Length: 228
Image (spheres, rainbow, N blue to C red):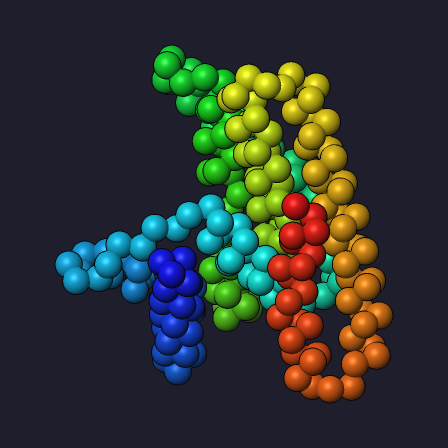
């Protein structure tokens, strides 16, 4: 019941604030951040605890799916090199940069725990940036790279984080961590491609609007759970 109440409350606030932001012609992500900051100082606003299940299963799949639908596949392919360098290379570099700094500054923290912290901090959130970029008229290529990077960087960070958590338990070697990373990355892409193919075949044969909308709503969770 607490999980359902938390999700409903979050969704209701997001819808209400986003609608207000569109009416005022301001950035919805920045408006949500402002409301969150204000709400944290109001005594009667209850504390909402975001568990990994809420974020990874409840929120992340539909958010990434919605972003993917709005992203041009042609533009993505044309800019795949900078997108890959930012979403994979930069995230891994930042993860180890932050991890090594924490490991050096805090002697009591293990290297694996420091890398886990780096993985949490590494992926930038480009949603607010792209929302502003569209309004100020930044070049289309810049917006495309930001949007493409934001689609993949979370996956890179999550895979790195889980490998680091496994290493904290001391049950894996460095080669096993690297192998787990590659399997998760390649396997995730493979499941996504197969899911896209199957959903595309099904939706082309569906004429009923209600069924089509239901399939669209279920797609991100079905593919995510299959990948898991």
